[in-house]
Image 1 (cartoon, rainbow, N blue to C red):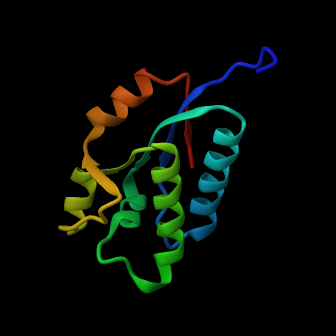
Image 2 (image 1 turned 120 degrees about the horizontal axis):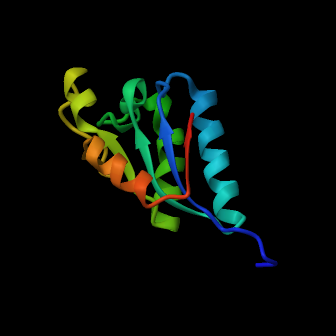
Length: 119
């Protein structure tokens, strides 16, 4: 690929799904990174962003969550939601495209990645 460094990336989202612009920025970045030949170890939904995995998905978030789901399925990118934060917020069920895990999963993804970016 013309001597370019192809990085393995971990993305961490921290903003609520209600802050749609930040989620869309992260999604656009992920798509552009993949199109440029980079790989994404995982997208970790932390702090306020755990509500991306809310199930059933609120109607106003359906299109955004569908876009994350498509990114995950087409590019084998795990969407990981911090179950500890989610449980503290009272979430009991998660959207099927998200896997509930803890900070160990994030640490493992970061250790296997060249870069970690936060949104």
